[in-house]
Length: 218
Length: 218
DNA sequence: ACCTGAACACCGTTCAAGT
DNA sequence: ACCTGAACACCGTTCAAGT
Image (cartoon, rainbow over all chains, first blue to last red; front, top):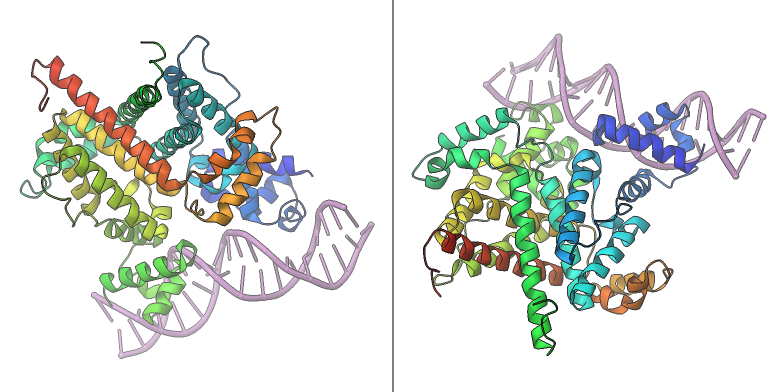
């Protein structure tokens, strides 16, 4: 019985039955041992979760297509990260800030730092930009954890809810109920991602001109 | 014993002792009743939390300063929302997407929709922009839940961690350890918020010109 | 209608005892 | 060194019984 085996069992449990099923009892049963023996390899449940989540964040393995500029690479990696979290909602539900210093989080940090520094940002701004992207991805997934906005049933439900509001209090929700009900989580994400990257592009242009260097590509 | 009293007690508990202390036992003790009696006013604990969180999101009460343009108003509201969540970390830790249809969430939605539609976005893009902002605020707070990036002790800890990495694997983390350790959550938030709003500004300009209308202000 | 008391099946964690 | 068995103090929830 190794720590690796424990994390494997925990990950399977988390993926197949969700975060609520991630109990020391269930992990022990899956491994065919007692709960107590888990505590030989892990301080407590919190440490187990921290190790599990950092391990689940090893997405940085696949690199974006060559020949893409920094914005395309950033968009590609952000979408990859988001899709990974959507495929593993249990991971997203457990993700806090505390794991940011795990090896896989650090790898992602190093990668995105390189991206934004190469693009022309100072280390400080590059760090903030990289964090902002990760922040946006996580928030996007988390705010839609229990929801499936592309499900027509949920869309219908939202339309009815908007439409049945008091038009004096929520005029826009009533007026645009149909449109609002159709906006999916994917739409939101793409609009926000594009806006963020546009903002970074202009930030790069500005910091280039104020430093007396011409724009990098024109 | 009313539902209001239960939620009051729960909110006090959440604010003073954190999410882990938000148990039916503790709520009952605070109210001087038994756990079982809570279930006369609430279906189960999950419903209690949902009601509690939506009630805790009633921040939209205070309006941004008059005379500000849409971007200033959006920035003001976003900062207000973030500061509210930072002041009530328990709320942020429990916030999921499921409460998005509560009365206070709807009020925030109506408000930000009005902001972006007035600014010149279509209802669909306005909805996506508003959600993106909320997403970014929540992600920002959530990724820093257990952390206090402005604490010099934590800053020192991060600097040492970055600096002691393998320079062959994490060259940028090692090289810029000092700078990276000093970037606070506030810095990240302001950079990301500014980038998002810049992106929205350009989105508005584009949708104005492609619709044959001149730019709204020049 | 509302509340109590007691029970239920679960949770994470500890620790003496075994090998 | 690692694992077991049994216990501990906690969870959320239910339900017959009281008023």
